[in-house]
Image (cartoon, rainbow, N blue to C red; front, side, top):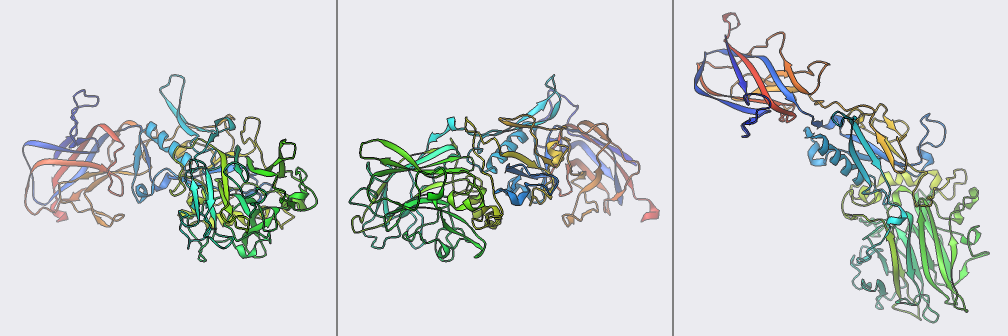
Length: 625
């Protein structure tokens, strides 16, 4: 029997530690000055191991998933309102790892790198336009600043003071997949003047529909203003009137089987008869119909026909409105602007009146006022999660007075988002990402809730606004770190221990405005994966059943003991496991190649400093031959 001691460097903390890749703590090679002879029919056993486990955080499928939620806090008793069906919100899937990082691998992060990764993933999967780019994660430390206590997760909001005048440089055709998406032959958009002009060659009244995807409307007192008469606009000018619509819509990437840009569960054939030309999908809209009447509408769930469709808003019954009795006649041409304003979940639409005396005033078409069950059709429903990111839509019809009508943006107030992009996953709204993933059925599940069904007068919903600074104070950030029967669906949530919280549902922040969540305990900075030692340059008989392949593993390193999980750790098995080298002849060895891995054979890069592996070699006893 003989003993071989292998190490990647002379000592821990050596100022001149070898930095070559062949001397890494998790994979190293010891070259011998003279050959070492191993007898025929030999066996090897692991005598002991010393390693340093640093402060890295290993992440794998076992601790990769949690969910965010931003909405009214649910009652955890499972019975008392609100429950998930009582709110227009849905848990938001979040994973620490990117898709190409998951498979069966383990990714390892330093503490600061993990905080940065968590910050990125929180921002990418919150989806609300006023919360995007506002999450941050810091390390919590004790008074000395040395011991890591967990994390401080801050969830802030872009308030009204941070709203910016958004870009309106891109216009896309928003009705029919048979028409060019860039609007060629349908309209001309002049970005410098923010003016949309209908192509006069479009002989039918419908077809000219444009959405502007560059920026979403801020839900902290954000507004979008459109000229319908006057500067660069004539659709509502006396003598040149024609049908028009100003609307707000989520961005639709994929047309339906019928070729229209609308959710697959939308049915425009069920729309209320608003006497409008055929038009593109909008979540909310206001316009002038073919009879010169002011009409207002929204898209909402129709339980009878199992779809969303366009419902008329009977704005003349709205207690906050400026109009009464019936649809307003717009034929006098004195209205020149339309303005939408969003406050939290609440949406207001107004029209500007230029009376004969030159006085300018905004008149309310509809705004949220609460009311009783029968008032659902007098006001817009809440800005729910599937339409968090609203983009302006302009539609210009055609009349004998005007075949090439024009409309013009004044501005859109949007949060200062850095990388907003409706064409990329996790770079815009929840609907947009679900549609790109072909999981927009989740949005259908949300929109089919009774609170969003206008015809359901048994289920009401109290809409949330903003405070004086524009903060949405009555909606809550919640983290679901283990699968929950209350916040559902939250399949595979498994990140509670990694983030250091006592509860699987974390719904009470340590402080508010902004919301701060502090870990209850420091996460364990060791791998949730078992580690193994490999002797890489011999021919021992080992099979890794997980990978289905032959392996070089010679020993398993358990979780050591309960007294220490990082730093210098020592392992010595009580009983040796002798492994055949299958060498029928003696071997002259010039080097020893050692590595540490997880069960999937991936390097355990959680190791640092000096690693020592002590091996026993012996000739196989005769009684075992």
